[in-house]
Length: 403
Ligand SMILES: [Zn+2]
Image 1 (cartoon, rainbow, N blue to C red):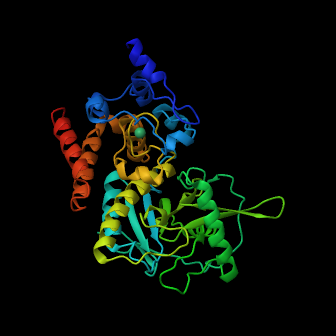
Image 2 (image 1 turned 60 degrees about the vertical axis):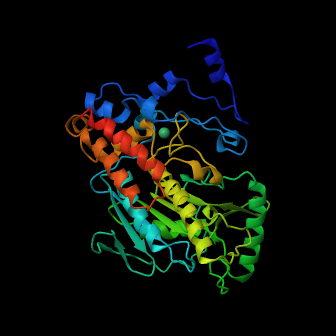
């Protein structure tokens, strides 16, 4: 490497002095030693031509204000991987009922198809509150839902040390404003009744994320790998401080990886989200345009959210679906994983109780088939993923020459 080039890589960005990884560090993070030749090729062949390096952070970007440690493939396998097994291989999505049109049926149908492709080899079922069963969009009812009558359970349960909402805390530059606003909202909410929907149809109240998480823990099905709740109300968390005061923080989600549950709010992904909970009156056409922006942001955010449940961490190596991201950055975020993260995911899913080495040798085409499924899934989104489709077609055409 030339000295000028080395100097470029030595530059640091943001509060925590983020440095772009050297090409050799990217290569080594893939950890592709000892793979079957075809598996290795399908994951990473010619990756520098197809995958972008991680973007240089700019003002307002996630990396300017957050410390990231990265996670190589070997680190994932050795300490962070939460293995999929044949008895726990279903991703459940609990869609909480909504009186707004942000949560649309089409959004969810397409989302499920996309998740089935992204997490190829896993089953994905949708639980729609109001119905009592879990559904796959193409299959019949498989299991009774359990309401558990715990909606009014206000008890805060902090006994699980694995609960982690750090990664999910609002990814926004004006975090303090958000917190203040959330606090104002929530003070009002508490006066009325914290966990109930406002009677005014154009106002939605923030909901306590801990309470929703507790509800999800009680309803997680036997065969679940994980259960993700999705709601369009804004969320907050509440902590009792030693001085008796309550610390209320707005959040777009919270998860407990140990309990395999996560709750995720769509509210702040809406370009017209505002902190007082009012929904703007917009024309049908304006609303439709917004729903497309929302849909794209949400698809990226939810795939990443589920990857966290697999023990995957934010990616610092290449441009990737797993990059740490502020809400505004989601509009330019790619939907696909980089080769390092793809290898983590696909190795975990396809191992699924099998011997890892054997499956790689016997079933390397799973990698190619996933690219085809992703391309087909994105094709359902009527033009929303034009650039991504071009990318997938080019990658597929290239990989065909290797098989
Ligand atoms: Zn990655």
